[in-house]
Length: 164
Figure 1: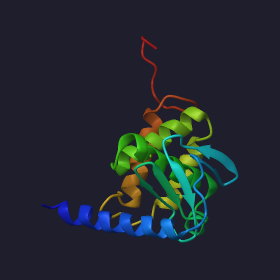
Figure 2: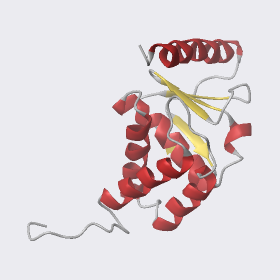
Figure 3: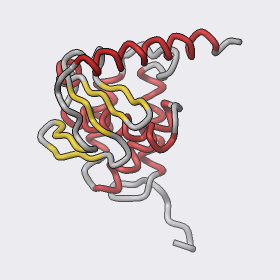
Figure 4: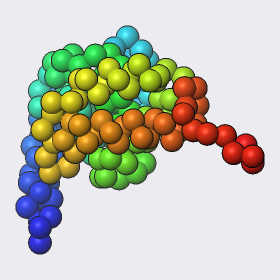
């Protein structure tokens, strides 16, 4: 029963966001967007961009909703991770920490997320309160750093084993 209220509230919130998007005449982009000057893609979802979106980003099945007026409050690297985080929901479901980790692994594999980028993102998210779905800033940052360190790719702190 502990989760009934957040799920119910999330359902109402998602319905409200969908209603806003339905009223917005701007077309959906087929999985692509330009985020902080970089071309980003999420083949699993259409992307809606509009200032009526009440936050930096949200994911619904088959849809990513982005609010540019909220996104611009974050550094470019964090904006790109937010996009990938929302894309990650298409693959890992509603788990926020799993979506964060998915985004970090993809960005590191693509070669554009470095330790400096993780530090920048941690500074941007450090003072966020968290809530029913996201961890508070310091805990979320620790999870992001752990995902980055565990992910293969450039800048990894993973120790090589004899099998590698």
